[in-house]
Image (cartoon, rainbow, N blue to C red; front, top):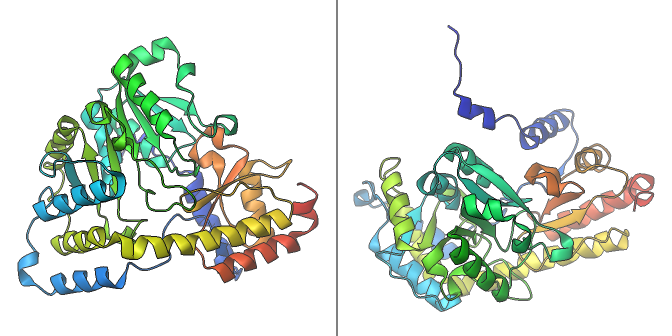
Length: 392
């Protein structure tokens, strides 16, 4: 039988991620020891009190029914958390929606907001789920370059008038992945003004809100007028090391949330209730865990940045997130250098062009290994000698 896939699948061809995964597997089968700094998945467990709460409810036979769009207690916990952390007031029953991880919403929301042919403003480089959602909606991406000279913030003034007229939605991500930049309050205020002037809806991805080091990130929803024009995604995956639990949420404009709620009522029947109960405990006790977690990542960041600088590799020290966005030594491309690191140092990073054309010339390094392993990675880089040093 001749089986063909839909035209939509043309947008989901094998990527550098799958190629890199295959190459890693090949090297491991050959017996090469790899230090994997390519994956943005926490290597640490959730707090003990969260695991205890999950364990308690998993043993309760009454917790195995459908949960639909999220229990009221979780929405209340999210609202209290946002008020406590960001001084944002949310109506728990209207302005909060539970998701199966923030990626669930990031991929599905463009289908709610956009018709085929609508334009979506998207950061370049940007998280790969944004392109997936745009493709499923049949929308057209317009890349907003994130450049070092602009502190990796998109230059809204450079967006052409004809694009502003056609654009339906804008996606932002601060602190970012792969670029660990922070947005200022002034930038978000300009975004709200820009959105109102051009009738553009704003989607802000705030998944790394708790992973910051020197200065606390601004929530988009903390800016006056933000709920009139947009929404903010958040997640417990990185903030509480609950990535496998698949629990996140959307907050903000109630009409946008209602649209996603209606779509999801036809797609799934909600997050497992014990996970929601564990999420409530996490949010209500965030201060007990978030500070120590930030300290762990800060030490990792400092170990790796110090080591890279000693080698002459002037990678910028990130103010937030779990990534370092480092320039590739000349004369390599991002992909060439990523493979060179695997072959000659046994270190796996992600080439920046995997996140968009503006990512060329960079690699993303994840801080998802302990300090000793990161120091070992620095030693291996030092041992590369002529390859690395002659290029810096």
